[in-house]
Amino acid sequence: MYKKAMVIIGLLFLTSCVNSPTTRGGGSNYATRDVEVVYNDTVKSFPRVALVIGNNDYQKNPRLTNAVPDARVVRDFFTNRGFRVIYAENANRETMSRKINEFISSLDRKSVSVIYYAGHASQDKSRKTGDITNYLVPVNDSTLIRVTDYDRDAISFNDILSTVDEINHGLNIAMLDACRTPIGRGGSIQNISAEGIYLVYSTASKETASDSGDFRKSFLKYAQSSMKLNDIFLAVKRDLIKEGQKPIINDETNGEVFYFTKPTPTYTPTPTPQVIERIVYRDRPIKSEKVNSEKRRKGEWNSLIYRGKRSYSKNSTNTVKDNYTGLIWQKSGSSNKMNWSDAKEYCSNLSLDGYSDWRLPTEEELYYLADRTKYKLAIDTDYFSVKSSWYWSATTYKNALSSAWVVDFSYGDDYGYLHSDTDYVLCVR
Image 1 (tube, rainbow, N blue to C red):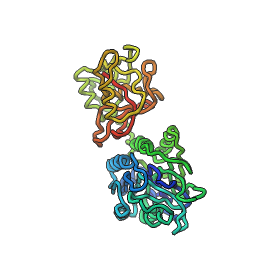
Image 2 (cartoon, one colour):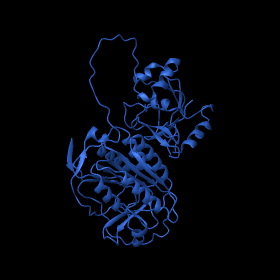
Image 3 (cartoon, one colour):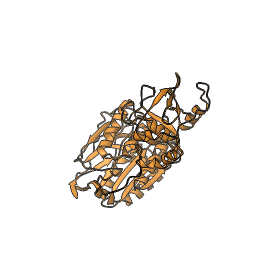
Image 4 (cartoon, rainbow, N blue to C red):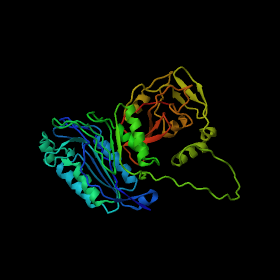
């Protein structure tokens, strides 16, 4: 079933600012016209194409930390969701132009397209067109000083969007995470808003965006679950506000439905007579059953934990005993965030209650510590004093060897983060 509407959803990740004050957003002269929008399951039959570029190593502007790592993780996510990904990192203008042309030539008349750019960007009124223009900055940026230089040597995101809109009558997706100050004297910077556009800003006008990776973390946390596009970004907005940013959402669509992760169909099975030999209760997703089944066969854990039961006792002032698993946990964990390597070292160097055999917990151990019947904190606060945040596990994320599983004690969720990201630590023995 098709519906007539115009849809351009911009998903452009710009993780920092250029030396001159940078901007993004502004007015638009995109022509409005009807396009075909696909609903629900039908959209999966459309070709999925993504353009992902991450730039860290600039010649003139400050080097970034997270643009390339963010782009790599997003590339892997889109690949796992069935997108053909055109990818580049630390790209000069020639390489960026070539990848953009490859992306555009890959589009069908009915496609699902995503543009993801992480790096320096800027915005101002083009001296060539007179339009407020978003500029993507290549790593060979030494010539970029005035707006006329950006018109000549930077990449116009407006031109990319206009071309993609002209070719693809399916769905075009994007996001803007960047500083929003002008190149020159600028003036009043406005949010880009036009019929059919869904555009997300990570921060408000005249505000500075963060190179912390928080936007990418939040986006992937929700996009990997079965959430609608608009629900994803509303959740991202809540997360970023907690981190001190001021995200803006401009939704000018007609409520079109799209999922990055397809919902699992619900059905009512037909009852059939059967003999039940035994019942195994689990509150864990299928992906970890093999590990936990092995533990059950060995009798290492009490089966009550798979039924959602939790039982703890005070082991000492600093530690808690899990009565079902037999594990001894830190009560509070680390006071600061750290990367994965430092997290493992923190636990191996820990000396607490006369013991020095502390370690970083596996993903299963940490996951079962979380109590998903609770909310902020998703853990038994009578015994534990942890933060409403993500905690490292020692388990490597199988789809990206440079990532490891983390567990969130706000909701009890788990996800894969880059080893270079920073999170809290709770050691176990």
